[in-house]
Image 1 (tube, one colour):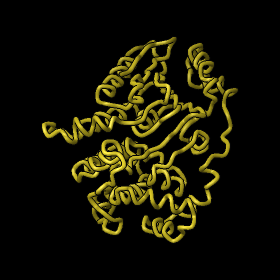
Image 2 (cartoon, rainbow, N blue to C red):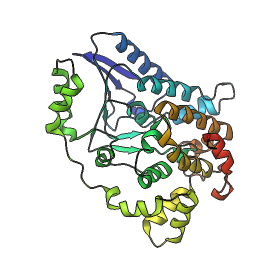
Image 3 (cartoon, rainbow, N blue to C red):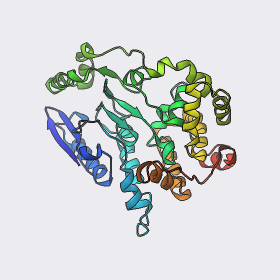
Image 4 (cartoon, helix red, strand yellow):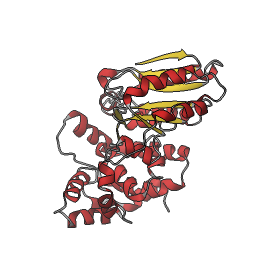
Length: 342
């Protein structure tokens, strides 16, 4: 599931489940935690590197099929949230990890893979990154404290990404301070050689300086080209105003496509995500991830998560039947109570 090795003073954790695009399951989470605890105790390890052995990307997120069959639909399993609890505990451990962490984002980097590494001290992204948090299509919201970072984005792009699961491109990640360095994938081997050769007390600081020659300035992306449209439709004070604005302008391809996307999302969780964007500006990372687990538990009890995983991963293409059918039927007080908003 993972490979770990020490090279010079670098403790490396390779995600190594390529057939599943490194989708995280309980066994992987336990192995990652064990490797991190071993490295924490080892005085020869000064820095951790998260990387992958999969050609197609770093990590596709949690193993939703396994969660669905082994936990959600397994009547003999009394602890339906066991996977999420273990995953969230690992992320909380990483938040306060005593040694610096470097992460390599490339290819598919989504969901739990983002949560695993977004707290790193240095994130290297290359031109292949396909970054997204698509949880609203699955009956919950961007979790594992990634919402902490989404809430720091400008309102329009933050709501656009959080509500629709829209892709962020490599240049977007650096521009929005979600990644630190943008490189060409062909240079990554040279960058690793530099990392392994550094012998100093400030490995991260010296590493950043030495790889500046490989750093690319972010250029335009699909998202920068449609920035005005994102701001026009998603910088609203209410979710209902976003939907209304999209409905009014159906001659616009962007409006029509994103209205269709929102119509496939869980209405209740969409309202939760909309409100959580603003609430998240006041929360710490730890408070955010604790709230995320409460929201997950709500989705498990309501059946929304089961329905989301079923339609996206099991019965693909089937139309979801969410616990709350329409946006106008969402009980705002229930949303506020879940989020602790008075």
